[in-house]
Image (cartoon, rainbow, N blue to C red):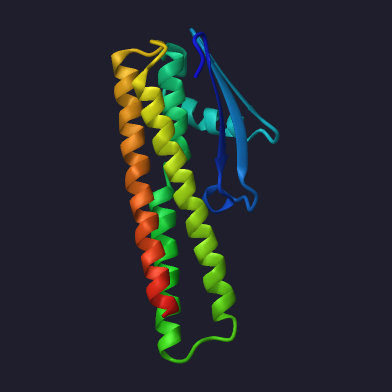
Length: 173
């Protein structure tokens, strides 16, 4: 965060991106009255198009658009985390019948994935809190509240990843 603008980068783990195995990497620049998103593969444009179908972004402030965008990144995350939980539960059931041959490999992969997700939500939580602090006075009260809610949502999702981590430890034992 700088006095006249905000510059940021976002790295979304591949396990959370629609139909992608590779992570989504993007950057943004927030200027007074303007927001610019930059990525290598056009994914940002797809997200913005989906947002435009639901909201009239032309009437929204850049701060609100940033908030909408960040929330769009997390829109289906709880469902994806629940699928991971179901998969871990199935692995636990399979272990009761005798550990599958590739069990350790799968568990290592899950634990790495869970760790990446935990870091991602930690960063989103920190980002939301930092934007909500509004140190450079670029955001309205409504935008500040939006960023607080974003931080809380990221915190809840981080909590879900912590529960997944604990479950993976139980399954491993």
